[in-house]
Image 1: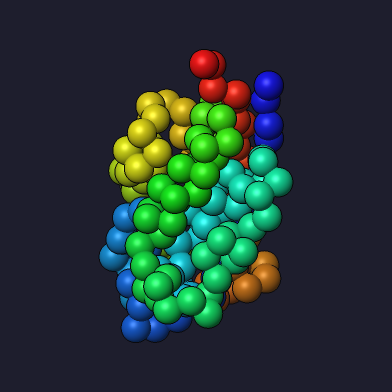
Image 2: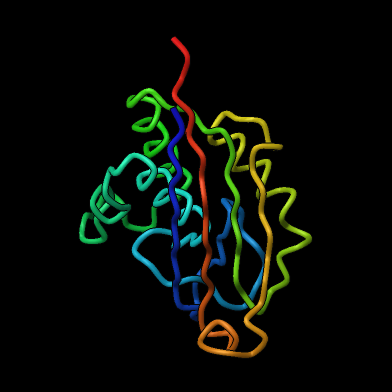
Length: 160
């Protein structure tokens, strides 16, 4: 049995925050605003995992009014999300992701993001795809005020 999930996240870019995306910190003069480290890519993956099994969304499992998650590394949340997926008898077949941001350019960092995500999920990095796009100057992303990410995951029932 297969299950497909789709995830999406967006956060404002602000001064005085580290810029964390795909589980890595990228040198940039702004960072993403959020209760956790605001890693839009990891948050989109988490929502895709939960969505595939109708387990609600990231905010239901890791609420932004819970002090346990203040400034937490989102990879820790991803580990917990995937633990729940495996508990329901599924594993990841593959994940396809898109980061939408004007700057900084993501291409140089994508190989490291793929490795970090695969390592966190204990899967082969060839099961993790990441692409980067811009909004060509349109909307809050195009105006360099935010970043967003989309993720699609295919889960497969684990063989006994």
